[in-house]
Image 1: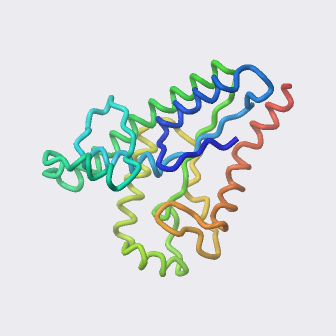
Image 2: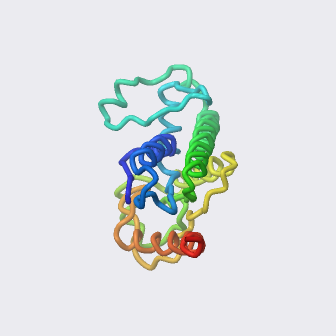
Length: 214
């Protein structure tokens, strides 16, 4: 069963996981394994939080789902006055704290229901080595190595600071021989297939163990 929703971060996923477990009950539909695939939306949420000034690390924040909603949330003069480095460090702190809480919640829910949980950290364009064939995409996105390196550093810092230690798929597309992304984080079919292979290898031992225990 796929419960993926556009723009959801890990906090929303953990809430949806709890609702799904309640809806499925104790019958045959209850899963053996729940896989969470996170990273990009978590960082985007954290960056937005800094921009709008919602900087309490104990608050759970949901990303705006439209440009209109984002505009309605405004821009904080307080955080706008910070340096770029300060804003980046704050985004990392906020993103790591929310991700850590979300993972703890989903793991607790899983343990209570007898469902094993696995957390995966998705690859981005910024975490994938630059290849010549990505040139047209970089031009279309109006970005360069310097900007992507800043994103990669924030992304890695957020993962490490969370202390979650998810299965890191950041370099899953490093061996691709053709384009795999169509924007900063979403892949084409080639990229999806390569990531699926890495996901399968990550969860296969757990699936076999769960099947053997039946």
